[in-house]
Amino acid sequence: MGNGGTFLRLAFYTATARQPVPRSFARRMSSIEQFEVAQVPCLSDNYGYLIHCPTTGETAAVDTPCAKSYESELAKRGWTLTHILNTHHHWDHTGGNAELKSDGVKVYGPAKDGGEIPRLDVPLKHEDKVSFGGDEADVIDVGGHTVGHIAFHFPNQKKAFVGDSLFALGCGRMFEGTPEQFWESLQRLRALPDDTEIFCAHEYTASNAKYAMSVEPNNPKLVARVKEITDKRSRGEPTVPSLLAEEKETNPFLRGDISEEIQKNVGASTGEDGASIFFKVRKGKDNFRG
Image (cartoon, rainbow, N blue to C red; front, side, top):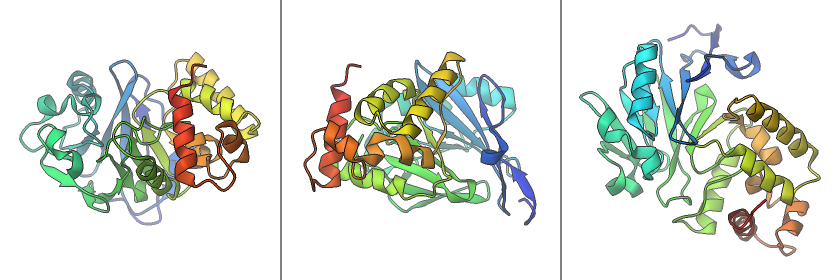
């Protein structure tokens, strides 16, 4: 464990470029060991993550789109897998479970999706806690994309691994849940501290930006963010993670109940409730061809 009152550095890396995030993201005062996080690109646009505690040697995979990319990254870094944290049951989040599962590796996942999570050891529900690396993650029910979808929030690390519940400038499709359930889930995420880093599971940001601009084109913070995203993608850089503060300022799925411009552009009525507005924003994205 780190000593209280010392600066501990959290390094966030991509699997293709070992570049730490800016110090404003990466350094803070804490008595908790700060984890290393490696982003692991998988399939066509998925991101998986490896979380590593240097002190305990524990390493967790957050979702497993495929085993091969994880095995390569673990070998490169000399880390040994000890945990698999699944956010939901879709195959592009659990497809590597069986191959990566070995003696000493425990698989954690949503209880409501339990029958569809390969090799599940520990079913989880809202407000459960997962011990890892001398710290712990809070389990948050973020159902909507799937009924059982969960997120893993590490308050001491200022990070939330949210799967497909919330994207940079977007959110997942509503395959199984209801508008009311999904909206409640997004409100839970919106209530986290503004400086929380949001680690989502897909590089959809450029596409999401086009839709966001179509429903809130006069948001200056969105305009500036879209330019930054365009520049990053032109250089082949990931746009994930993002800060929750950014999402609250620019993500239409978190702003429908507070932005009159969004309400007007999705055809919401005056006084319409947040879940109904969210549903209209979501349907708009489903049908968007921009």
